[in-house]
Length: 564
Image 1: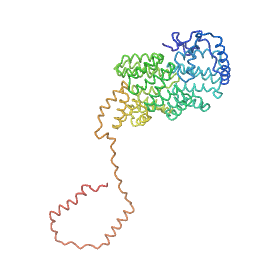
Image 2: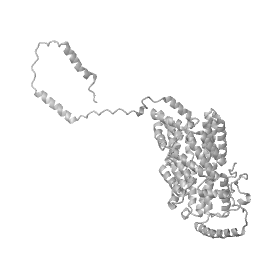
Image 3: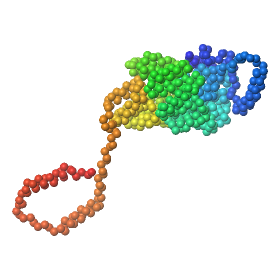
Image 4: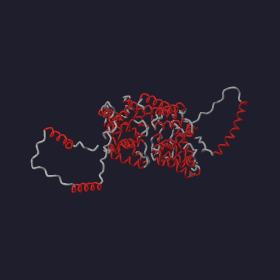
């Protein structure tokens, strides 16, 4: 079911949910707009009053109602479900998110100074843009969040608007700005759990593993349950702790109850299976995610990736095309283009690459920085020098994640600067993440630098981690391994200890050498002269003496008196 909004993002009307959606409330129910979130004092007063009223009503019900089944509790509608998901820190389904956006739009039309409702609406716009790949909604989100701060400043308790701006900055890949917004909220409200997910994303984008770990642990302390488990699984995954990541992700999937939350957990299990080189398991998990929530379009792309590994190419092409239609992200266009290229369909590949450039240009107009993706594309299919410039810009922005380090190292290698690229490629692999592409890039750079032992190990690691990590690069990794051949019987050459360095020659002291020569000269002058030799020529030396003399001269001629 397609629940993407059809209106122009600049129009004042909300995106309308599809009437075929089983989770959408009837039209008359959707017009019942709930009031804005109450204050803490109001909530406590209502709770106390509600407890008394509930006791009175229950007593009356026990007296007045005859035996028989009464009507059960009313099922929550899409707005209530979306609000409940947001309160729990979990994702809402696209249809519920659509209903929440429409509900809040209608409310703020008549209550333009309601700062909490404006903050909720702005944050919902960010989530919609991220989940639908409709980057035009980022501008609406920014405008709405600024309106919320104009109605009530962040210092006066409107921290949720700041959190919304942090989420917007993360979505636009401006991780430094997201960090500033998030840390401002954390400083003022250290126990506000809602700020920690955006801080985790910001720290991860900046490559600050220590801060990301601390934020994840704090989030788990403040907000138990599936959201904390999901974040912890991602932390373990980024550190290469596969078993821990898998166990935590499974627990999250088992404990998830709402469809969107369950689908997200199953999708994570599919990604972990794919990275382990288990495509059949990955397909099963992605299929389960789609059955749970048909709007989880990212699982279509994950399914396509795994189908390529299973050589079910026709199904993979259809899944990629469906994913791009429903969730037009440029990374999916790159993956589909590379699949076409691996099949020899260069025309179709060029079409996808052109689409990638158009999507990246549209994202840039919406304030989204797609430099990392564009650099990955340019390094392999365009201008490696341009890729290097894009990634150096990212590095200057302090975007120093493993993904950026890997891409920069590979771009430098492709631009003919393998020695410089080696440092970044080693940094990416050194984070501990189990990524076959990272190991492949490092191995190929080491091979170019004739460091064959480490090159062989990293290329083997790539194909062992995921034999089908890329339709283009995986075959090249196997070819490079075959060209390197088997290591020598005694082990790789780089494992042998290097020969000891030669001992330095003793330095001569100029003053003392001159002094010795003067002493020898004085001794020669004062020594009495030897008697003159007889005029008779000496008899010829015996043959044995001549051989001995020749033998004594041989070492000097052969240079045997070399310094050690």
